[in-house]
Amino acid sequence: MKRTLLALLCTLALPASAAGLPSPGARLPATGGVSQIEGSAGGGLTPWALIAGYGSRDQIGFTVFHTRADPTDFSLHASGVAVGIHDRVELSYARQVLGLGRTVPGQAIGQDIFGVKVKVAGDAVFDQDRWMPQIAFGLQYKRNDDMAVPTALGARHAEGVDVYVAATKVWLGAAAGRNLLLNGTLRATKANQLGLLGFGGDRRDDYRLMPELSVGVFLTDNLVLGAEWRRKPDNLSVFREESFKDVYLAWFAGKRLSLTAAWVDLGHIADRKEQRAFYLSGQLAF
Image 1: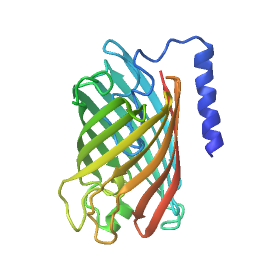
Image 2: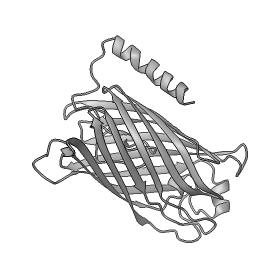
Image 3: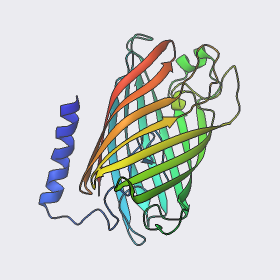
């Protein structure tokens, strides 16, 4: 699986390079982040204030991505596209599919996620003379395909909207001479397992504020080592929903192609505990 994804992305990227197509945009490499699992630009687990692609103030950038993670008893796939408009507005779409494994053999749950993000202040990279980060507001509308399993677990709704604010800052040469990225996101949500198990539940059916944190150190100009943590609401009485966390390594092969590998701890999912996975994601920029 990992080799197949890598080969596919490289095959897609090479013709564009060979054809002499222009760069995906004028911004610096890695300043669009990677594609997070819900389609927004950021880390693998959490959106950042960065805008997708490499388009500058007078350009439009596009990205496409595919992500796969296979937790101990499940499988999770996500694919999508994002458009960055003038380094100010981001529109995104992602399709997620959760294979239910031994919990419900042969069955899967899918959901569609439509996102919008607007940068409102600051610049994560170029405002080095100020401590103020780049700040963006965003929302993600999520629509679950099949509520049979989520309803049986106590979920109340098939649709939901997450609203968040993200702050991202890159300090040049701050970590033993290496560039350091920090991100904090605060999300208002009632999603169970990102919405794959519905929204709201028998324990509570109101919005809660959930923090998300990311850190990344640029080992080189195109290689980033980091970690993420994402807290999630605990709405269902049948199981305790735990925080997501990961350790990742992102490689930016120029602006056209990026690959992210991570070890992810997804905690308790439905009736299965200690769901951990190797995570692999690829992104192409145009």
